[in-house]
Image (cartoon, rainbow over all chains, first blue to last red; front, side):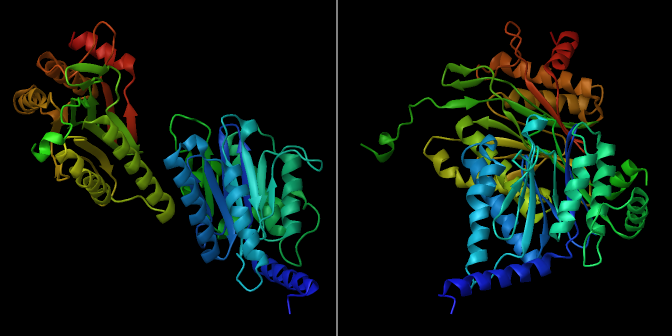
Amino acid sequence: MIEEPYRWVEAIANRAEYIETQLATGSPIVVLGYRDGILFLTLGKTRQKLFEIYDRIAMGAIGHPGDIERLRMTAIELASTEGFTRSAADVSLRRLAHYSLSPVLKTAFEQVYGAPYLARLLFAEIGAKQENDLFLRLDYDGAIATNSATFAQTRQDFGVLSGTRPSTELMENYLAAEHSAGATFERALKLALDAWTVGHLALGDAGVKELPARDKIVTERKERLRAAGIEAAVLDRDDKTAIRYRALTEPEIRSALGD
Amino acid sequence: MTPTASLPTDIPLTQATTILAFKFQGGVLVAGDRRATAGNTVVYDRADKVLEIDRHSIMAIAGVPATAWEMARVLEHSFQFFRRTQLQEMSVDGKVRALSKLLRDNFGFVLQGAGIVVPIFATYDSGSDPAARLYFYDAMGAQFEVTDYAATGSGSPAVRGILYYENNWGKKPLVKLTEDEAVTVALRALDTAAESDTATGGVDRDAKIFPVIKVVSRDGIATLPEKRIAAVFKRSVA
């Protein structure tokens, strides 16, 4: 039946709808470039969502744990093989995503007799300078969105990931207005938490459509912080050591927040 | 012609010597001279034989650098790969075994007369019994955990003598030394080794080339700046 082209299109549309439903409740992930590095943050830690991929690359993901795991392993194996056979300097997020991960996701998504990946990934790679930082979002169909300047956007020093498109867009609007690249770690941490709250408020059918008022964000943030665990990690710009990834402990995050 | 006569045993291989390590107040100090030799020729005077494998582990090498550096590279990548994929640090036992396996796999080359490596491995164990740990190996891959000190390489007999003497009859045992005192002992030991062993560089007073000295502790690895080593050298060795 799917030999007929329009049946194929229908099948693809159905599976996109199915995947979107599966991903819709995913807790947002915020990645911010700040003065001394890149910060990853998310809340609601039932399982780990932030991962180290290679010396200068980290990843956040929402979706099915099994699918996230397969993609994470693929990314680590590709990066490690390249880093071992050539050098760490030859490992690049751009190549990893464009030449390896995106085609894999697209193929799985379009082979309608096989299972697609139920996952959405957000990567960041720390550069020598802030203008070289790369933020890259990879969707279940292999689509790539980055922080670089396009016709539609100026270059951004952040990346976001969420369960739904409205939530993602609202977070992007919020950060485009509020975030500055020169922010300190404490400032970036607070802003990331606010952006997460905005994204969280926008989830679901009853979610907000417009940017919520300041006091609503603050109230919601306080409530979520009381209930949920925080997960955060940084990629350090300091090049004294090769490995830049560091997971932050919960007490460390809470004390930096003054919570 | 006997089979062994066809082996090219007369090719002078680049070798590196001498390395030492001992426990002191601040963790484990690991030091290595900078000379690489091939037969009677000095090949290189700025070789780095004290290699960082991960945030808490150092492999110091005596032997053939080509093999040793490759081993260090394999170790570094396998520890990192384990941590990244398994989302936990490899145990100290696992790390110690990994190096043992590399040495064992290399033993065929050693028997053919090429590629002998005799390393020291120092790491900080943050497991159930947190402590700095120190191991040395033989060329076949047997590992020996030591309580106080280890030295390998062609200059090691002299170094072992000094460390034994210091530990038993010095002003205080090695483990009680402050960092400055530990650096003094390490510099004096390497300089003594270089006095009689041509394959050991010791301290090059003219070119101002100092040994590489690193310290492993709970906080990770600290590489002592050359200025600091030079100052200790000037004060208590030269």
